[in-house]
Image (cartoon, rainbow, N blue to C red; front, side):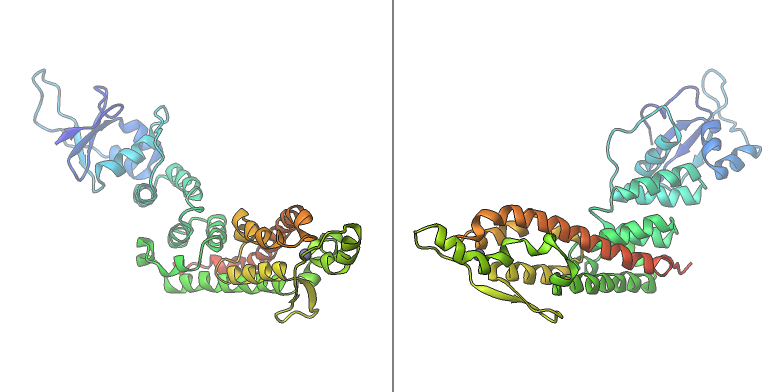
Length: 326
Ligand SMILES: [Zn+2]
């Protein structure tokens, strides 16, 4: 048995919450009653005063045995005590336990804080956030944001085990995988036929399209011997087969392969994906000078177009994603 540190060791406390691992948290009933309707009800009931008293004759405080361990209890008590700020970032497991506690003790304010905090875990643990958001019906916004974050990670993540899957409805999990497939198909469509997806100068003025037609002028302007890139075909089911520099066709091939697993604008526009294309473009005397600007500009547009297509899929399946088994 031990006592918690500040501010849960106050001599002015009027109740002790005892954690499952034997730590005493001396707190004020009024503060807990304000944040939890369960505590509010509990403290409004008449209590049996302990016969034990300390040496000064002061009655011993009421002790409430809690099922939560001290780490969980401290986490959510800090949220109840507005004057005290926890400077350490909570772990996902801690936030998850706060969620369970906030439901159990009907702490609406804490649940809002949990939803807000869970958003910060979408970038690193989207599947775990999705599972909790669906299971505890934490709102459409969080479900959608977690599903969207899920696309930014390799699909292998979906086949790895996370603890939250244990309590997950299989239909909700299947919906997430189906959403992934739908987004992947939408992105493949853009990548398979860029000449249709991108119009005007955004597409037609790029070095990978001009290299073939302008290389003769380029050769004429300079007397030295030049090396140019070979041509490839941007097709793969496209309506319009377009001839372009092979290094760019290979870039689009890689984007298509990437998008099957990770249908989002994040990876296709990453510096590593662009750098690989630039390495090949650098071998062509015509493409070399323009490729850096063209690739960075195009990759940004490509990423935005992909993200917009994903948004459209999500809009169509808004209720579909949000359907809860509960
Ligand atoms: Zn070239």
